View 1 (cartoon, rainbow, N blue to C red):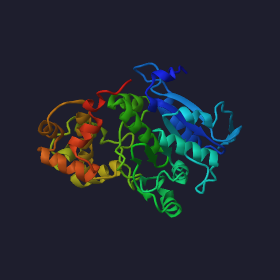
View 2: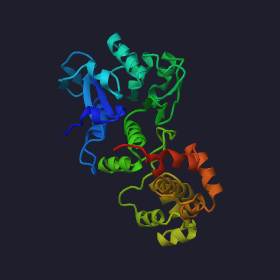
View 3: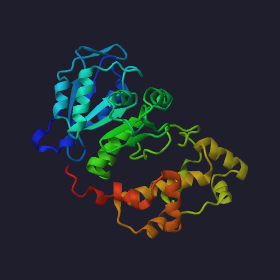
Length: 333
């Protein structure tokens, strides 16, 4: 894998991923895949990625795998971003050397980013005291009990506190990785990474970690052509009778099939499509809010703002400021 010249990179783009005994391979692989692979446009990685052993090896991983890692904690001394990909237990017996290295790194401006149970290691440093953080939804009570000074966000995908980023379990760690790429390099780079990894390009951190019903259409669903048409024209009006006729169903059968296929109602499903379309336009265009609202089916800018605040805990203008092209100015690729 091609490497950057470290001195040519912005400080935060020197990224070190921790490896440890009983390594959580999913979280570790997520970080390597997101940050270490070549950007499809630039033909090189966005970050100078290194792996540091948190303890002497060889390191065991789940599934009978062993890792031999060349670097140790000395790599943290030059890191601008440190990733802690999970941890082996929820009552971490973390060495004083690792805790001291993490605290020293944070003091010199290094970012620390945790996936899943890695939050417990970061909390053990004391750096999260008084700050918001999250972890896998199954572990948030244990985190709150062990570290009552941490403001645990129980159900969100990830929390960005500037220099400290924490994420929930499994796939939400990938959302957080894309968020960091978006923050460092802008939406186009994050979208390229998402396409390469065949995952949705962006979910806001405030979204719930899990839902009770599926939201995607099952393969082979007879509603697929209709839903594709609605996705292509999110400003279309919902007419249940017309959609039922287009699907060759009665109204009652159509609504039942729609719920079976998407886990929700036509109105709720189309609202999600409209919000995704609005986010894409806010990221990639300079269109005024009234025109975005019209093109996405919200009608007015006021209605667009209402749904952004209700469902995304943000406003369209704040979203554009954080993720739009104008936010990319000054970012160095």
